[in-house]
Length: 127
Image (cartoon, rainbow, N blue to C red; front, side, top):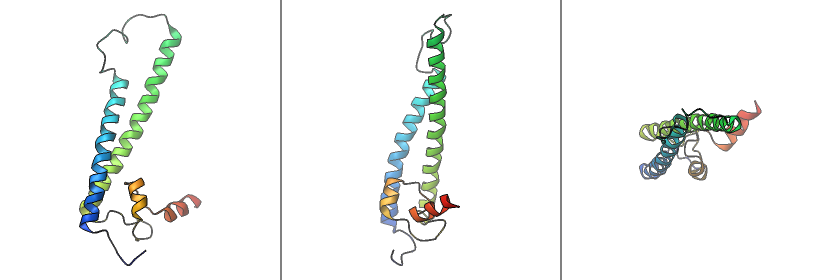
């Protein structure tokens, strides 16, 4: 890489727009998953009616558990994106926390919340 120690304000703004876009999409998906788990989208009696369809109830419970796990993962992703926005404001965004060098733009476009370069991430897994 070059001798640059951080991305320019224009580059940071580009990344900020990308992150805000991904954040809005992630929040919408999280809200949908959360509604699935808490049954806020339905006004029917599906969760209160006595039913004797044990297999359907089991599948429904499993589906809610899966949605719950997905919602947790989505919330973690949202938090990572919010942390990336903070790093943009601090002008430390895109700097590898291991090497102190700039993370390539291609990686940041693919994984906008990345805090390590591919090399640093690979070395971390080897430890």
